[in-house]
Amino acid sequence: MLRDHRTVTSVVSSDLCMSCGICQPSCHVDAITIINDKKRGMFTPVIDESICDYCEEAKVGKCVVVCPGVEVNFAKLSQKFIEGQNNSPILGTYDKCYYSHATDHDIRFESSSGGLVTSLLIFALEQNLIDGVAVITMDSGLEPRGIIARTSSEVRAAAGSKYCPAHLGDALSEIANSEGRYAVVGLPCHLHGVRKLEKINPQLKLKILYHFGLYCANTNSFHGTEYFLRENEIIPEDVSHLRYRGMGWPGLFSLTMKNGEKKTIKRGTTETDKKRRAKFSSAFHYDFQLPRCFTCNDLTAELADISFADPWNKKFIGKENVGKSMLVVRNKIGDELLKLAANMGAIVLEEADPEEVARSQNVDFKQGAQSRLRALHFLGKATPHYIGKIQKVNVRYMWNLVFHVMSFVPKNKTTLKFLPFVQLSRRIMLKLGNLF
Image (cartoon, rainbow, N blue to C red; front, side):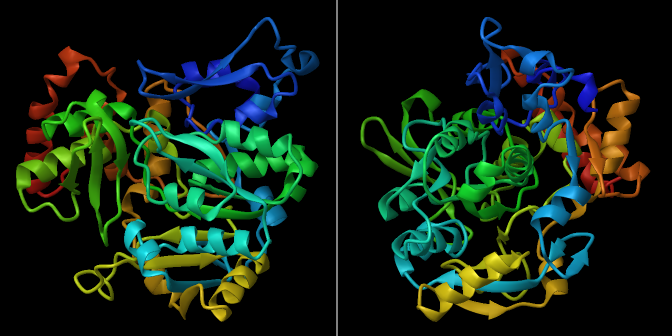
């Protein structure tokens, strides 16, 4: 609950922080800095106590009010920002669904799935619909940063998924202090925070024209990427540039080392070796998740204008190798942008069956969020408060936390020695019929 936290300092200590950075631009005295917390392996806010005035001694600071880690009122935010006429337990409020891809083959091939986000942003910039876009880029090492991309080359450089913590604090602060029209690209948690920030800052709402949301099951700490690289005999400190996906669909890891050498690594979706696949799952699905992600119930970025995802269905798996995007359009501004881009030849657009789209992602994990929330609350852990989005509690999902116990353990040389045992135990339990 909001009143349990006066500032985001207690949000971090309660393991409710999502590394989104939205608290930074909410501070009217610029007392918040987002740092890379090496111990946690994530971005966290730090408050300069000599500057903070506790929002003029308010019981709850604005940094907590906008924080998506503490509370999300889906009912009010959806009613205020989303105009869709249809509703689905999985998709949320929406108007239409599409399959699509960029007509530029290079953009399509370089991106994670179809190049739609990249091509739409470049189209909006070239048509003078926006002056810039808040995106996450990885232009140095393993640490991403939020920037305002103002050129097509900057947008292309930021293409591709990032399977690690990423914050938009600096980029949103720049938007708040600049004139112009902007787009924002983010995960569901980013969009939760942006919408809450717009609610208390009407001027920001006028500046941000487009909200692009990326489907997300979970975010992993930086420790997950470092573990995966080491397991592939790569020293993390020797990496100059990393792209988690690209080079076709479903894509490859691609790395540039500081000595100029280039390397690629198969992802879990294309890896055939069982042990290597298990290590990928350990790094990016089970053992390095941010604790707050276990209680997030938004897979499809329900507060975006357009949500983007991989189309994991029979229509494309094994048949598509360049890239295809699956879109959920939630309001008029999103639909108008898509149709304008399609009419001018920037993208190819094909209307999709919403039921098929809803089944095209692994929704099982997110459907267990409420159950895991109940289990963590029972264990005395701080949990978020959701309004207007209710899920049933299922005992099987509560026990599912056993699979992810390492995500709640501090990462050091001692605890990492237990990972092989944890991985083997998990495989045995899964083979026994997913008893948990």
